[in-house]
Image 1 (spheres, rainbow, N blue to C red):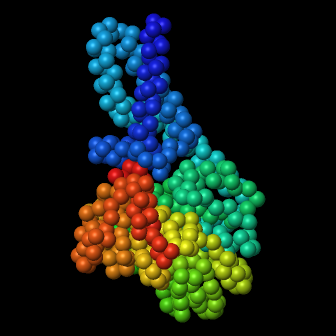
Image 2 (cartoon, rainbow, N blue to C red; image 1 turned 60 degrees about the vertical axis):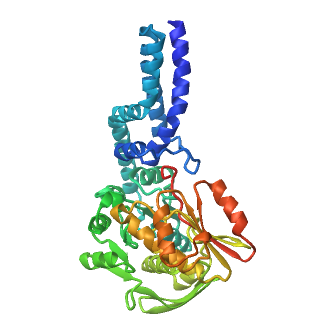
Image 3 (tube, rainbow, N blue to C red; image 1 turned 135 degrees about the vertical axis):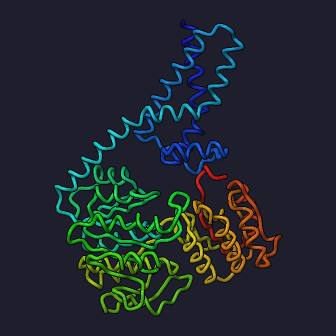
Length: 473
């Protein structure tokens, strides 16, 4: 009995360490079993260290149950089976079936997790209901986080603002922000993300916003949404969850957003289209930033920002329109735009000699093109480091081929990261007569750095465009 217990404890420790790679995929896929199993079946294991396991309360609960479950299995094997060879065989089988055990523990814990989740959500709703606070919801395919950060910076000139941090844009991310961060604030800003129908409705029903902001809508998460029409319907759920006298602001730089603007029957504002409520004109961009005339409600504000790219200007216009509606003085808007910090990993210059532009966060087709446009503003040896973009469903190959050809028109050297879009980017580049000798491949950051050390000099401009989580090879 004692020998069996000791041996079982040793096995459980080894088994738990072995299982960490599966745990990581499980968490990276947001506890979605179907996506987790898809990764396992495709051998997309997460061995890297770009996305480490986050030991949330939920994950700790899962791990405890996983350990108890594996302890019982190993104890039964070691205590009741007396043939050594058979014990070893059973242990090997259990190790190989560890992804299945992850699934079993997931479904065992699901009712408990759903109950805990609902308790937290009800507490967050009750807390919001007690407060007299302006609530703003922001959604869209691209530009959510940047618009949120810009808007927060402008509003802080006049208001005390509570905002969802980083990409806390799910039900529990928003709920946690309300419960942990919201205090005597004037405004609450919630970024709202979605990967399937009704995701926005769930988070919007928690917040019940007074103002909805719809940023650019495009081909993001097509793997789960399937069609652009489904994306539009899901984003429109935010407008449908507005308070009775709520206002909706639509960033009109995409056809889908303009379509939703026309569909919405309430109090609404359109931006980034000439003669709309707010737009930019006389734009002059350089590697030092952007100067433009910001037109809001017919008034002309001459502004300068250190941010790069048209996509950032569009986000500034939309955020400024919201601030204007909330009666932030025009001069405060101008001053806030002047001092806007770059959003981390979004067209952020992180080094000046040589120039290094970090646009590695969650790239998309529109943002990718904008980053290449920014690259043309610089003089010198241009190097693009990218794995392409993912989660585009059936269009992924076509879009990455096109991006490869666009890189070829701008860059002098290309470093293609990861395997997932390798061939499409390569073929796209050489289709535009790009020198094959100037295309390099790297599957690790170490290899990437070795190549960069050979290529970079003081006149180089390096653009890091997108980064993929560890469950992509």
